[in-house]
Length: 226
Image 1: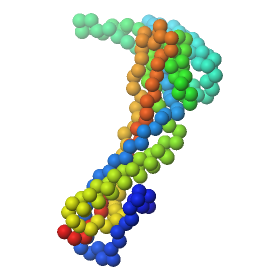
Image 2: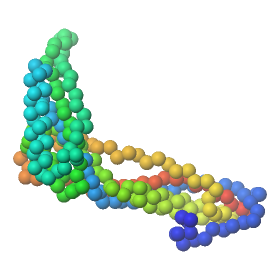
Image 3: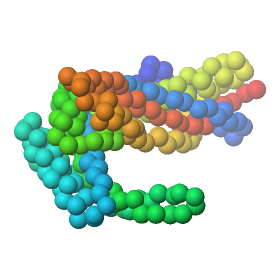
Image 4: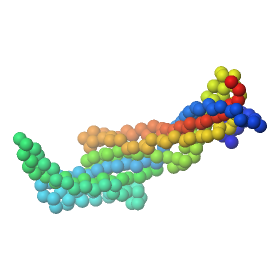
């Protein structure tokens, strides 16, 4: 069991008829170096003529894809994540007048070479992308690290229960009679750079940092005495 792996043995009682409860929370955090990334870039074109805006967008998108393929990125790792067309309007003195059409094509580029993220961003921008929507870092063996965080959360909760029982001079009964696992917040890509910020930079520096795998639990223990 998890609590036995951390160096202490369960106390077992033959009778728990008078057992009372200690309810505690536990948190476990494991920091992991990401080994995968998804870069989302956008190609935005505007024109009063819809067909013209679409044509310009298609040409730029093709140029971006071809440039990325030159980086030895597998074609299957480049895919459309979003495509939109909508009219834009000006509002002058409360009057709505047509401005132009806006076409946006977003490409998702996946890579397991973290060191080349800056090069991928620069290549996409220099080839026609004018929006860098975000970069989402991931780890391949996510489940393994989530389980490690869960073990640490159980250990944390158990240590709290032991401390409380010791302070109250009561006998804690292990293992816990109930463990409720909390939910983890999803990792959401955040907006990063505009094309103006990227152009003119030799290689855009991208620091992946560490991914935080977090587990939260609530544990209920029985105790005797008190």
